[in-house]
Image 1: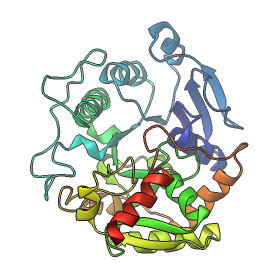
Image 2: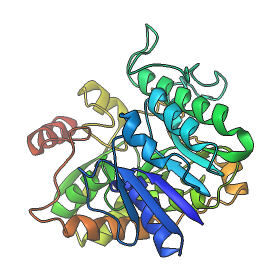
Image 3: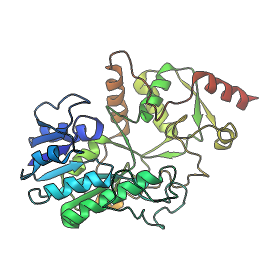
Image 4: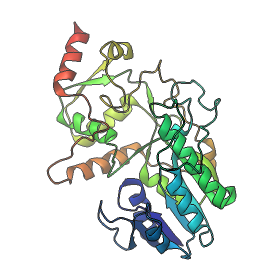
Length: 334
């Protein structure tokens, strides 16, 4: 199979390129060559998709699969229109943020998805969108651009949940691995029985390479793990002596702890009832499989341990400072 990966050097797109090469496919990557190293065994074409004359290098090239993690409808639209005559299938990674009701509504599907515009130019969005709204709206616009060009039978729309694994750019799971590895008393949010559902980037890659037609929510299965099980496995993987102190949601709320940033992988259940209620039924019926969470934790920790100078938190998920963690725990006990 001939595979084109738009990107191919960072996290998810790199996982697709590496898996495709390992599976014996002919792989081409298209990126600016500024971040990450080239994937061994792949043909690298250097270009900036924001420049039509550089994107045009791909015109007429035959591919069985195009994989794209794009964000702006204008850029995804340009790629899809250029490649449609010579490509058989287009897999686009969208997001669970396509639903305005996620995670605040108990049934986030009831309100449908954003009315994203496939012809949106630049970063334009309708007035009144805030928080994750612009991101979700643009992702839906990009979905529609691909569907318009390729049609539903030649398109995979992958609405991803929380993506984890080696080279995790978001830093949410790595933050917890790093914190647990340091040991001692750890502020553990919520209840140990709270569910979590994560998906390894490599599992999305395997699913995408099967070219399933349709729109899918892709994350871990129902009952994948509780937060307590996740933390216990992380403690085992890192060889830590960590002691978890479980602090209820309402205490964290009163302390003005920011979910997802100060405490990655946590949102208060009352404010985000559907945070982990993804519907993966259709994806699983189409062949989505997820590896054991312990394997993802071990591989992610191995990657973190290999980073020269040590792993560092991302700007998007900086986590609690040690001082703030100690203060919240002290206040909780008092």
